Amino acid sequence: MGNTAAAVAAMRGVWLGDAFGETWCRRPAGDFAERRLADGPWTWTDDTAMALPLLRVLVAHGRVDQDVLAAEFATEYAADPYRNYGAGMHDVLAAFGAGEGWAVVTRRQFDGSGSWGNGAAMRVPPLGAWFAGDLDAVVAEAGRSAVVTHAHPEAAAGAVAVAVAAALSVRGGDWSLGDVVARVPAGQVADGLRRAADFPGDADPREVGAVVGSGLRISAPDTVPYALWCAARHQDDLAAALWATASAGGDIDTTCAIAGGVVGARTGLAGVPGEWLKRCEGLPAWVDRLA
Image (cartoon, rainbow, N blue to C red; front, side):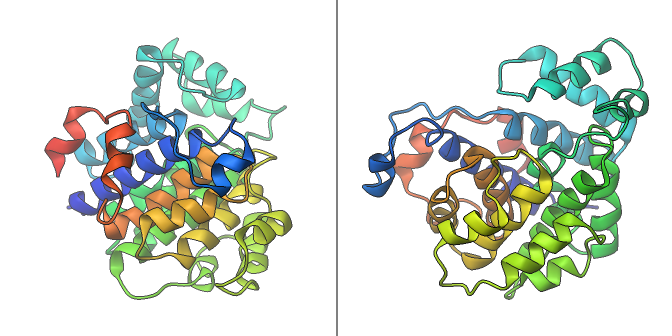
């Protein structure tokens, strides 16, 4: 049986990070410098919309059933397609809904190379938390979850990295980017994690993001290392992790969803200002019933 409580905590971290990060995507820098929060509601985006089906599949099946996961993604998308999904994902999820097999649809993206975007990584913290007691299962199941929508190996590597970080977060004790990269396949994501690990914990996140990327290229190698550096820096403080992550700009809702899911897997929503939670668009009621 998986760790349901930790998976729900990670889900809430993804949700909060996603909604918080989205508020900063089109606001002046002065608002951030003075920490002026946006009025509510803080709406969540595709990061949360794709993590929810993954959590549902884990609860129902205890593992990643790829066919069921593809169907769940399609159902979630059909119910609300206006969650800022990427252009390619609109095509993928519509094809799933039309009955096309996920393996065929996913592998024909980008002239057969598959997408190396962030979708597989941003949704995966609940999976890492669910399987936290078995890191081999974390790696295997994260990879299986990734390829349902993202056939490129770097997208799968990004998902593995985030899931491992979430699992280590649940397991307790300090963890490092070195602990994560030890489980990640060789490639650009792993190289980015090593570059990020060279920065000390007191480095300015904006400097780290400038070097390793903060999501502007909408790819796993450009996004995951930075988000995990921020999470590793604030392992026991979800709000602080989100402020740090957002400071570098880039694909803020996604970097914050990743960092939030990883840190939240350990902390839950403890210490998060109540005003933040009041402003966030709520999660579906079934998530709270799992807790």
